[in-house]
Length: 170
Image (cartoon, rainbow, N blue to C red; front, side, top):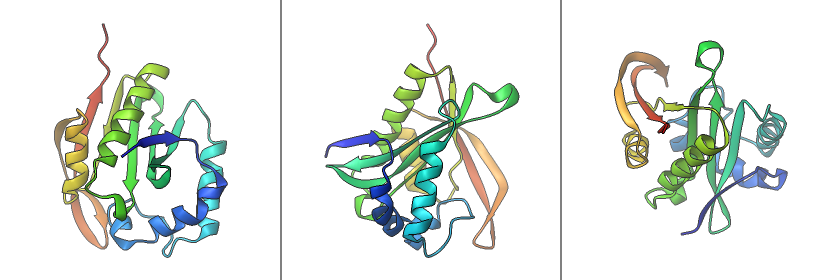
């Protein structure tokens, strides 16, 4: 399967709304995302990503064989952590288990390390999201520890895991 990262387009809004309106996807994302997720919500998100500060937000649509398959972004942190980026991503349920997440994570990390001064990329999946943890591990991220009782998701206190990938500096 041909996996690519590309800039968002407003034409992605309908497909994006369909992807995020899946409760299984939302169960693994942070709160604040409307449900159901409308085309208008998707257009707002896409415009936000297209107009974001290009030195702070590196956001891409994930495509598989030309079809929208998900979203991935790295968000530069602030202050003393300004050379650290937080990774976030999701894959459409119809593309689960096909290696698309791993390819997308590897691609964005390569892009970040080659095109920015960021030296550390981290992700904090919910501990119950075994598939996301596996994607990070297959992408070269190191497990750094468990953040116990770190979040409340769906009215339940949950742990999160900390993973990081450090740029190899020669």
